[in-house]
Amino acid sequence: MLPTGKKIPSLIGAAASFPRYNERAGKVITLGMQVNSCITNGLHGMPLSYDGPKMVALISYLTSLSQGKPIDLQGVKR
Image (cartoon, rainbow, N blue to C red; front, side):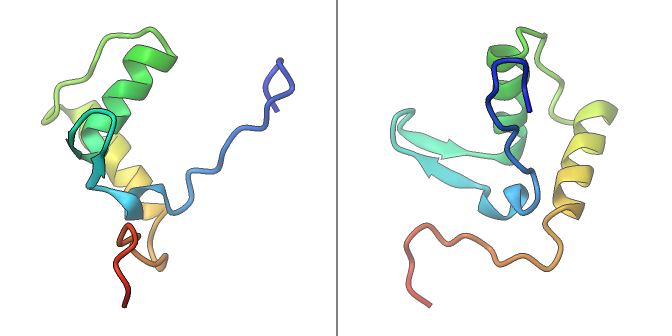
C-alpha cells in the first residue's frame, strides 16, 4: 500500500502484454519503452539505455514474473 492508500499493482504477468499498441500514443509500445515511461514519468528519473545492463536486468526480471502466464493478445480471439 502506498502512503496515499492506493494499492500497488502486481507486476506478475505484466511482460506478457508487451509489445502492444498504445492508442493514445498512436504507436506500438515495447516493454522497454514502458519501463522508461514509468521511470521518467512516475519516478521523475532519467531513462535507461535500452541495451544497458540495468534495462536488461529489469526486462529479464519482469519477463521471469510472466513465465507460465498467457500472452495478452489484445482482443484477438483464440
